[in-house]
Length: 73
Image (cartoon, one colour):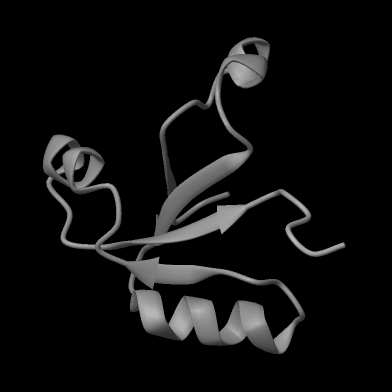
């Protein structure tokens, strides 16, 4: 998608090697704005300074994170 940068695995052949969680940034949108819009559409997401090593690697202070896992029975 234009204007969206995904961090982490992007090669679909390697998806089975990682967790079903991904992080991303949307150009010209704050993380909190993206998260708010996703929540309004029923998509659970977070923006925070999680995984400090990943943030250091990519030079970011925070990212939007989505986990494609069903946590609640």
